[in-house]
Length: 171
Image (cartoon, rainbow, N blue to C red):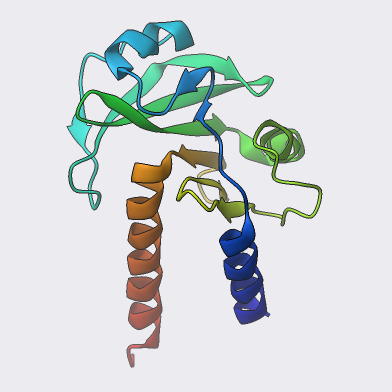
């Protein structure tokens, strides 16, 4: 079943049109320091994103903002001065999953056939991914422009292969 879902995802991803040009009112490629205040963020401290060489992330954990009709923490991802992605983290997700899921589908035009946990790669390399973290009761939404999307896709694949190989080790 998982293999069939992955095959479907790859087929849909290869045929999808151009992805979003940005998220939360910000555009991919714009100067992130100038753009952050428009989203209600400060972003003075930037850290390398582990596993994504050349990209940095600003974690805004103390300033949740209203996004997609819900409060969320926002991480901005840059390469140099350019905004390349946005990660939204919704706490207490179990109670809000339906609202968050439906809002992401509407906001990014993923269509009514989007899966329970949407992950769409667009022709230009950009992507939108929704992840549920049940143990931590979080939902994460990654919206990535073409530059980050291509690298992030590889990062996810590597993480998946490492997880699979770890699960296959004899005990």
